[in-house]
Amino acid sequence: MNTKILIIGACGQIGSELTLALRTIYGDSNVIASDIREGNDELMNSGPFEILDVTDKIALESIIRKYQIEEVYLMAAMLSATAEKFPEKAWQLNMNSLLSILDFAKDGLIKKIFWPSSIAVFGPTTPRENTPQQTVTEPTTVYGISKLAGERWCEYYFNNYDVDVRSIRYPGLISWKTNPGGGTTDYAVDIYHQAIQKGSYECFLSEGTILPMMYMDDAIKATIGIMQADKANIKERSSYNLAAISFAPEEVTAAIKKHIPEFTISYDPDFRQKIADSWPQSIDDAKARSDWGWKHEFDLASMTKAMLTNLKATIG
Ligand SMILES: NC(=O)c1ccc[n+]([C@@H]2O[C@H](COP(=O)([O-])OP(=O)(O)OC[C@H]3O[C@@H](n4cnc5c(N)ncnc54)[C@H](O)[C@@H]3O)[C@@H](O)[C@H]2O)c1
Image (cartoon, rainbow, N blue to C red):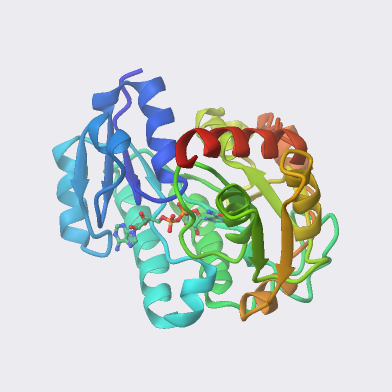
């Protein structure tokens, strides 16, 4: 497979694992990583890398032309918690980057786009359990507003210009290789680090806060899966609901205690509690499963085992 791929935001939590996975499939030299900053050694040493500010449309176009890029994975964005601190900057980054890429596809410069949405498109008026694919979407965060607007633009460009853009509403993602980038579900990564390093964790969300989550391996599988699916099978051109597991802080604590019995948790909720309270607890992803064959592998127990094993080997 000689498809030329550009990943924008390749040094982030998802991009750094996605880049390596795509390089294994498509060949190191065919997958161009780019970001506003440099990434970890494994990413930097495994194939081509370009420093790119995605809001610089001229620089973006020149990289697309230089490598004759066919597919773009647009992972650069400002995430939920950080975006609440810088709403205007978040809106500009999250929207302008997407519109630039959609325009390049409309003009025939690139053939296919992956753009991630989020469970943040939902809000307090959305049914919180088993949230349907089509439902009320009244987000209350600037991040959620930008993701919802992005979904509408994706569908618009598909309907009016036949732009092949594909999207997933990721839940909170849990990984051990790269730290998360300022989201409301970040606690579910940090808790594993602290369990190993300190044996205790102070959680910024309260007990009982159930949120949809997913292990990174499953998220990467879904991302590559939707991009490799036949065009005719992608029937949702806004974004697909995607689900794996849902849990509250005390449940992940119980799962960690099976490996580290002395581990303890305490709670000190901050501004992120309000964001979490506006999001669903569980997601109905039947459409993704039937349209393009999505299936998750990791549950809370197997993810906890994988997180603790890998983190113990890397951070001790
Ligand atoms: N991680 C999650 O739990 C999660 C959940 C739902 C949706 N998402 C979405 O997935 C995508 C990737 O998320 P992530 O967790 O990897 O985020 P992240 O913050 O870890 O990574 C984003 C990357 O984009 C880069 N970046 C920022 N501004 C840039 C710019 N102007 N030009 C180029 N690069 C820039 C950053 O340096 C960073 O490496 C985002 O769209 C995010 O909204 C993530």
